[in-house]
Image (cartoon, rainbow, N blue to C red; front, side, top):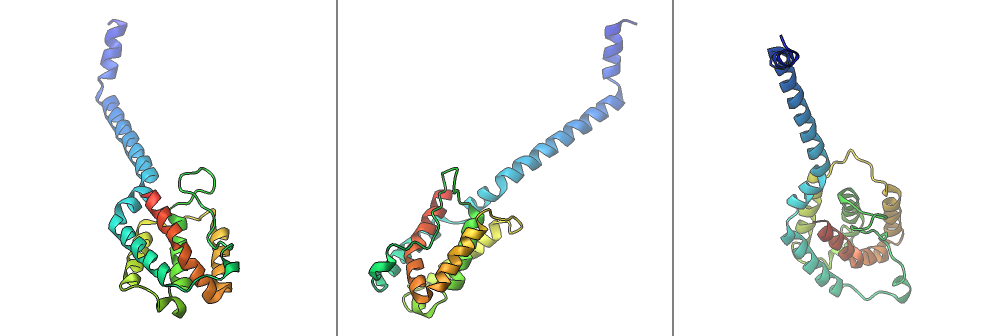
Length: 183
């Protein structure tokens, strides 16, 4: 038997074909898992959060800001939210950080009596929908690299009480812009 015939016979053996099929299947499964893991979170949140919800929150937030009492001069310089960016490599914010910030806003800002009296109709329902959607599409098992920064923001809002809540409402449009840029 010639060398070429032996190679052809060897490559056609059923054992080798089964092993090659199993290896091919294994590689394709691994590739599928890697693609799903990298694309999962961002695509899910982009798909889950309706654009109409963000637009409606944007419009009602602007109406809310117009209803609020005017700021004092000294508080204009203070910025409560950190300077995040959705498209930069440094200080980049993602869905996990947005979820944590929305949690803070619901607990410390929009629940205050000083703010509740100014809220437009159905604003709480829109916030709840956004909060619930973020909880659904963001994996809470991950740890944000900006946890300390976000906790510092929460402390600033709580420390300033009603004045901090009023200032935070004025800055809520930053959060909506970040969500819009990530979509």
